[in-house]
Image (cartoon, rainbow, N blue to C red; front, side):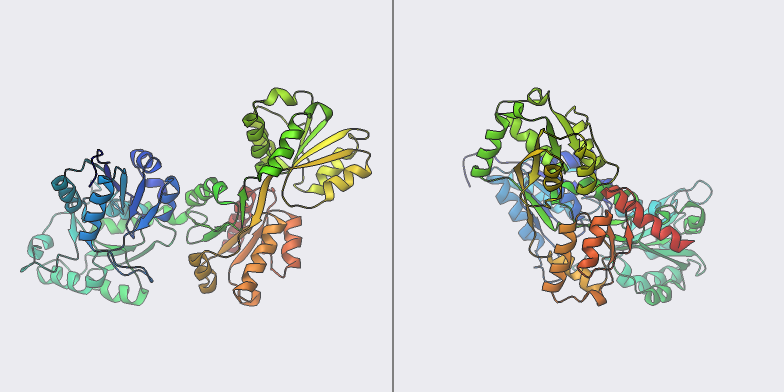
Length: 513
C-alpha cells in the first residue's frame, strides 16, 4: 500500500447486450477509467469507449479463458484502487440484480475504497421489451417477480417458495434458469400453476442472435430441448407472453440475426458499427489495414511542402485519412486553413468531401464515382500548366499523377499518413470465418480486398468453403476482389460504408420477397 490517495471504483451496469443501452454516466466513467475489469456478459463493443487496459474476469469457463474467483476480483479492485487508479467494474445487466455487485461493494467499503454504483438495464427488462412481452400490461398483470433460477449452492435449504410463486398474481421471470427449466416448470405445476399457462424462454436478449421460444408451462422443457437454446437466458411465465405477435419489434430489423465484418481502420469503425446495431445486426470489428503516423523523415518533407503552398493551384485528397493527416500537420506547424486560401480543392468521393466540410472547406471538384480514374478525368481539363499537390497515403495506385501529368499538370505527391496491412485475423474473427458464423464482410478498397484474400490463404481457408458473403464498396473494389478469387455477393450503389450496408439490407429484402 502507498501513501497516495486511493482511486475510485465504479460498478457500472453494462446492460443486457445491446451496447446502445449503456447509460450516459456509464459511458462517461468508461472514458476516463485507468483500468476496466469486465465480466463475460458485457458486450466487448463497450470497451471501445475506454482508453485504458481492459481485462476480462469471467467466473465461469469461457473458451480457453481462465476462471477468476470472486474473492480474487474483490482483491484486485482494492489493490488497483490503492495504487491510485480509477477502476471500472463493468458488469452485465445491473450490478445488483442477481449479480455480485453487493459483495464487491462490501469488500470496497471494508477496505476504505471510495466507490459508486451506476445502474444498468437488467436482463429481464430487455428480454421482455425486445421479445415483445409487456410484463405489467394493465389488462394482464399488476405485478412482476424477478426470481433466480440458480440459488447459491452453499445454502442448506432453498429460499424460493414455489407455492407462493405458483399463486403469484402476475408475471414470473426466472434468471439463469435454462439448465433447470424442467425442474422450475415441474415445481410450479406441482404447486398449482396450470400447465397450460403461457411460458417462454428468451436467449441472448437484445442481441442479433436473440432467440425466443413460446409454449405452455408443461411443454416448455421439451420445446427448449428441441430448440438447442444456450444461455444467457430468462424464463418468462404469464399471459404477457401472448402479446408477442403484436408487440415484437426488434426481430423485424433488416439485419436481425446477421453479423457484418467491418474491415476499415479500427478508429473509423464506430459510426458504421452503430448503424449496424440500430438495424438489429451485429458488427464485427476486423480491421484489415491500420493507419499510422508518418516517420520523422516523411514529416520533414510534409513540412517543407507546407512552407511553400503558394506554389500550387490545386490540392487533391483521395481519402478521409488524407484530409485529417494534412490539416492536423498544418495546425501542428503553427499554420491554419488560411494558408490554402488560394488553392482549389478536389476530393474523391462524398466521404472525403464531407471530411473537408468539417474543416469549413468545400471541394471544388467531387466526381460522381469514387474512383481515381474519375477524379483524374474530372481534373484533367483544369490543370494544364498548373501545379497540383496530392496529399496521399504511403501506398496507392498511380492513376492520378500519371493521368494529370499527361494532361499537362506538374504533380507533387506528399505522404501524409501510413497505410499498412494487418497481418493476421483476430482469433475470434478467424473462428467466426471458419465456423461460418460471420455472415458478411465489407471490403472498402482494392487493397483491403486483396488483403482479405491473402489472409484466407495464410490460414488455409479455401474460398470455395467460405460461407461469409462479400459486399464491396465500388466496381474497382469488386474487380480487385474477383481478381483475388473472391465471389462478390453485392456491390454498393453509393461508394461509402453506408452504401455497403444499404446493399446488404437490400439483398436481404430481395430474398424475403
